[in-house]
Length: 412
Ligand SMILES: Cc1ncc(COP(=O)(O)O)c(C=O)c1O
Image (cartoon, rainbow, N blue to C red):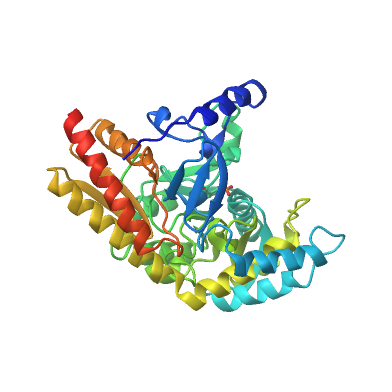
């Protein structure tokens, strides 16, 4: 197979570095894509589960825009609805009717949900969830899980990061994942001070294996929260609609008070949602929280169409099956070359790691060799499956991966 070259990407990046801090910042920064020379930096177009970069290279995309793409790029049944809504009304002086329809739909769909509040990004709703919890309880502190990602607002970071002050994080308490005893201890040390516990449905940090909840974990956390009047917030921004269409708490069998959605909710159209239980609606209505574009109707229509389509095709089941097909195939291939490929998390959002080299270099090299041949694999982050990934895509991916294993085996 011919390997890709990225001349146009690199030229664009050189221009970008002069006029944009970091050239490309945030989660799209090339920094963790090691070696960066193996990765494209700019996309020209995207369709179904594929994208083409500015050098004309085609990739099967296993990052799905880091989550938002769930039905496929340019998915016409959703995009048509968005275009129709935008041609009628999008950013206007009052909300469109579709906002009510979407909230009604989510109340029926999401297990335990009674109301919805819409914004744009995941961080908008994780932050709002904590404000609602504080308004409801009159308490200041929150408990979060070490290494959990909830966005980029100062409270989500640690105060050794530039631009973050101690005051920004002074109300945060931290507990380890899967440690209900540690949580119980924190609660007893800070009796009556904790407004909320926030965590993702399962633990999916970067550069590390993902960890599912241990049996009974969520039930214990829920029980402590209910007993102590602590608001239980699930950050379903990344997992939402890839595990269970009713929310990932339905998949793991517990009931939070607030659930944060974003990523997959509208197949790439910008919208996030906080869905809450009835008893917190009054507190939610007291918090002043809004944004210039939070009422745009196109993404709301897109969300409604995306949810209905995911329900119709049983999206989470399809993605889990596709992910299993992919990761089983890759693990078998690895074995045939004498390597061990560890798969963690869930099949629709797997984290993979070649465990034969503790420095991560082997895994980085293998992901890079796959990307250079058209299977877009990052080494530091969980991957994402979509409904648009076909068995043909997976077959082609396994051919690419096979050749990449040959290369890394030879180089070792
Ligand atoms: C679990 C989780 N929470 C919150 C966020 C923040 O979402 P956003 O980047 O849309 O603000 C992310 C983004 O990756 C996430 O994965």
